[in-house]
Image (tube, rainbow, N blue to C red; front, top):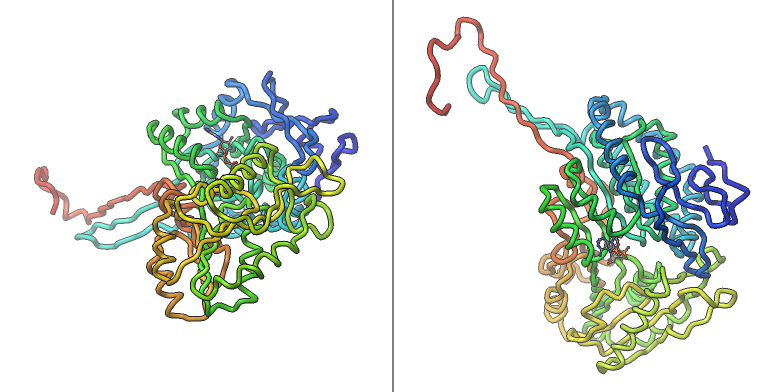
Length: 519
Ligand code: NAD
């Protein structure tokens, strides 16, 4: 069912059910099954990154509203946890269908608020949808373990049970995919969920909440609050919240991991990255250069798995001019414009930060081979655009190498051997993703085994695992011990209960107390 859209709002694809009809629509809270206007006196403007026009306002929820949201999750938990797993699965089966039917609508909201191209926004929804589809196999994923006849008349078995109220804090760069890593997995296990989307891109989450409600999720099983630091602190501290899923920057993630853990919660935190693409001279040149350019500049580099660092090994160093030529051909435009390859950055501040990091490269002795800082996009002169930028002669001690740039900037290092390249990657503190480009199996195998990074692509530039696996970033890119989605996601959102059960026949009744530890 396609949601009705309001004809009164300036951006007609804002769903009427989620926004009021004022000229700058206000994003509602979702509390106890109702989309409600916040009573907050603190609001944050939402901008279209291609124009910097204000397109909506999101509230910083009041303490009373946040308390009401958690109370609603808590009230709904008992009945939802007691709902048969088959019924919970049915909700998810309807949900995946509704997401498919509304995929383009969700993508349009993403492009409007986040800036990425429509095709890329559809990919954002699609990768989240895959997690929902996988969550539909919960009936096998939730199976416990059994061991019969552990001793005479005694059996041992375990259940995977929900934790209670779980919470999610999401970043701006994947407005659909990342919330969909969180609440569907948690809820299908029997938990209820408090979601705090990124304050910059709340629209997709609101529409996803409406679709979940339409799929039959009972009131209170998902609640949504909005805000920044106060909402985050509230989630970290609230005694009724048992687990926190966080995706975002290291600054926020390390803080949330520490504060949430201190309050006795499980926390999983996916954080920043510096992903290296190692280019061997025996690689298929055509494929490699295209893949590198796509993975460095797609989504304007605002992906945690963007391949933002290339290490050219040996003769592959000579491929640099061709790399630059391909990057030059990318079309920078507003995300809803036909043919756009990359859109704007999320805010003027993000643009300034990226430009400063490019400046730092010049100051510290690197060479700017392609400079996107001065780009002007016709019709979108106020947008936060930076064109594809390539910095070469980069050394590991330079700021542009050490910092996650999170923009359309590829930094290029050189190495004489594979061992040297591996050392560079392993010396970098981040461990999110990496890729090697080669036609030699032994080289690929050596790299995959020796590189200390959680997700490795062999001739695959953005190796984000499919949902039957888990998202396994490591080292400074992750805090916690169980990852997002896949089996790991199920483990994160459940706790084990192990039952030791003895059924003796009557004539085997104990004749005296057993005071010794059973052996
Ligand atoms: P961010 O950390 O600024 O924001 C993420 C969330 O944390 C938001 O909901 C925000 O309201 C909240 N927040 C922001 N600053 C905070 C603070 N100081 N204290 C408490 N809460 C705070 O991240 P972002 O800019 O929205 O997203 C970009 C970052 O996310 C990049 O570093 C990127 O690599 C990372 N990311 C990682 C993954 C992954 O899976 N590893 C995926 C996507 C994005």
